[in-house]
Length: 283
Image 1 (cartoon, rainbow, N blue to C red):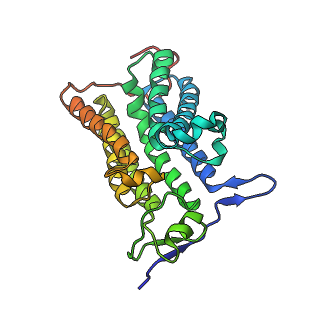
Image 2: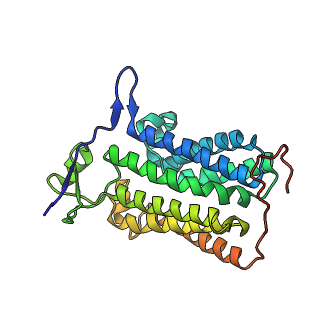
Image 3: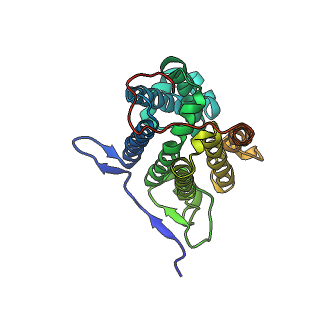
């Protein structure tokens, strides 16, 4: 019986003339596919095509800035407070998914106020569908980087991350939980569920339902996987629940609230003209 898997993937796809990393490729693929999914939704519902480019820029900016600042403030404020200029050194690593989520939330609120003039829930209910896919692809990028893995395990699917200095320092000779795969699997399943809810069940006609299901599916998965994942920073070792779990709880509760709210309000019947609108006016 297979006792472990030796993981020695090169994080770089090519190194010359420019370096292209698997993580960056996964990120880019996620945004490209996500853009096309949103475009298909906007056309399906008759939203203006010109909203697409604006939403893409808002979400891209919110994701990167939020994820970076989330890592800075949630995990390593002591370090960056002493050297604020290093906050800009994003190429050195250090992104937090909870910060990215907060960044996207703020970006969508601003996008809704400035561009759509609709409730932010309208955008959230569509945007969370591809975000679940992007989350899974990013975790695959973490796998290629041999980072964010779990505790030692004797399960047959344990990975030995031989390219990781952290693994050599902490677990030399021991297989570890491939928590990147655990999370990616959960996010891909969530993506499939949300696609089914949107295209087969018209769940977007219950404002907040898709957002609520996303929050529950994404952050409950994150909360559970954290039990077998290594702490991101040393000071988390003294906590009964680590920072990732504590930050997940408000999103899980918000998800429950939005699902309950969606089912206690009348269903909104939408038209589906299957073409982009000429203007940004509401139906």
